[in-house]
Image (cartoon, rainbow, N blue to C red; front, top):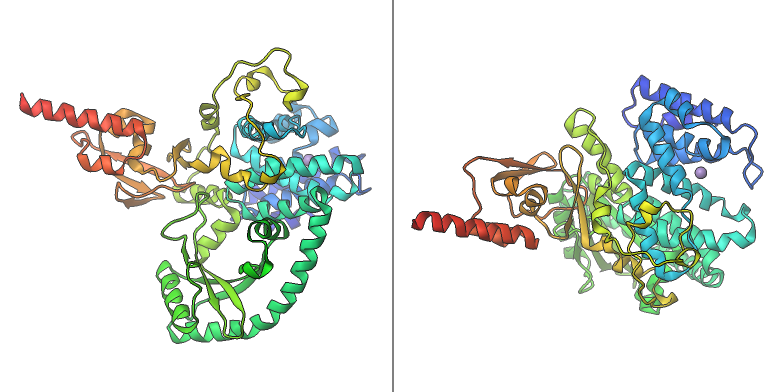
Length: 506
Ligand code: MN
């Protein structure tokens, strides 16, 4: 264990970045000197691992340092004043946020999962707090077997129902996949054992035939002029396989247990590669998915196809660019990094005020405490949460509940200043402009997404940075009505058009 293990992973680190992380490293090591983890290891291992995960996700030196310090107030008795004096307001803010989140507990009543998820996000206030908390939970889950038996299941369920959906919605597959698989054996040991032995058998069978196919694939793509390719394969996560087995029943009907990844330089190459593959191997009908033209709600982009390999096997191929691959692994974390880069200066990081607007305040029932599943929560946060009771669909839906999550109907995009605007899926720059202010909406002359000029009908995706160009004499046209998805934008456009017509009639 050395500071270097962490600082080497920092992206484009300046000497100041390295110095900051090193300082936090030694500070945390000293503060937790007397502590041990349940595993008997020094407590500092936990902070070291958390920070390493954050650096791997591409988070800034500030966030990585906060990761090292995240338990110092709660567990080592360091005062907030000391953190502020030594490391500044920003790091204190993150450490403090993570500490507060530590007080939110899952109490095992299904009907409050969603509230808890919302609460969790609402309390974070800043996306960095949420990401530190996810990295913290990842290490806690990796070491869950050392925790007293009677606590394991509760922690695993809490992770599955609160943390996994959040990681999923933030598009951080790297975290969501591992967290899911770490929870699985503690939640349903028997299903875990069965799925594991099934996967083992299937995997062996597939890996043998794959080697040959991969060689042929490279040759085929090469003759089509696509030479700059990287290939590898990924094995489906155990829990993800289990979830799919419940839907499809037979393992023979699951084709993406082992998926080939083909990474090519450009979007054009993706489509060319698809053409070359389909003219050599017969694709399975209904299995061609163009997530480049139609990205998943969490922003995932790639082309998927499933082909017969010719030796009685069937394999899924995922075609993507390097950028798509990085995004699919790191999700919002990769956008945070990108955002800082395009501007060439440090932008304020997005806050999470949008959550507050999404959560309808409901009167709290008197005497509602323990059975509501949330304790130790300040009143102002309780006020934010919708306590409306809804029927639980039973155990069957864990896993599927991601779909019903309110997150899945919304996208979150940024202004160039870093404010988060939440919009329904398929929204366009027009909706975005009206969501900021009607004055801006009423005078759109163009828009940029991630620095590029685009047409006003372009669909926005999670994490996009949208900039609206306005002109004094620009005004809404009927074309805009086709583009606008939100009711409020459409209403304002309609009334503006009407007003204009009346104006000319006069
Ligand atoms: Mn911790």
